[in-house]
Image 1 (cartoon, one colour):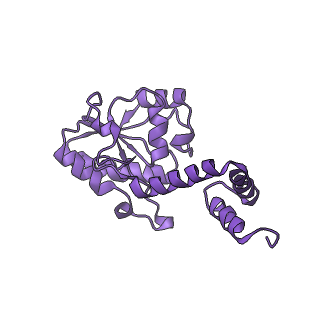
Image 2 (cartoon, rainbow, N blue to C red):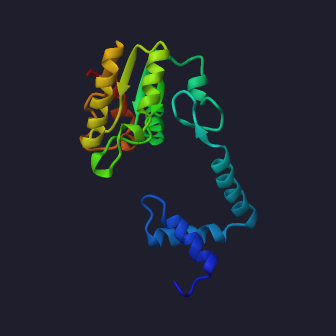
Image 3 (cartoon, one colour):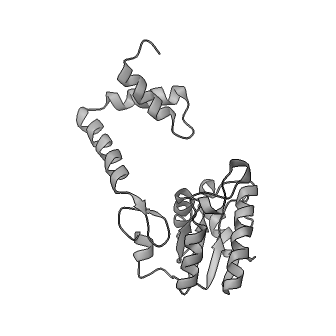
Length: 199
């Protein structure tokens, strides 16, 4: 891209590294950003910088937050006896959009995937087990995806949880097989949550 300034090329390359963003989309995003008033561009840059500096994992559920404990875990209205285990923050947001689940969450930040060399130690399985051992958790809902990695992760965690005397359930298969939770609509997620099965 010899016709573009070095700083513009760098900006386009940063956008291109985002998931699902190709070369043309990255170029459009960069050019759009540069067409905005300078104050808006600076606000955007400040927001990115502030998020990078302040966002961290919740000390309870591993959700992303700018506090020690995320708002869900801090809420008095949420049941701590039921924990919904999700692969990522996008899946947590999808579940929250149903307005159906009144418990708390645990974010794994990935799934077990031997082909990608991702094992249990690379996701937050240990933190979940520690939480179940120390808190009054009665039920753990496995809400990982219905693809091979999601199923493997759910089965692995359920085997570790059963000796701890906690009820382990799985979302019902209102969810399409092979799909990611964050792309499911609220009605499908609600039905899957209501029809969960014991593992």
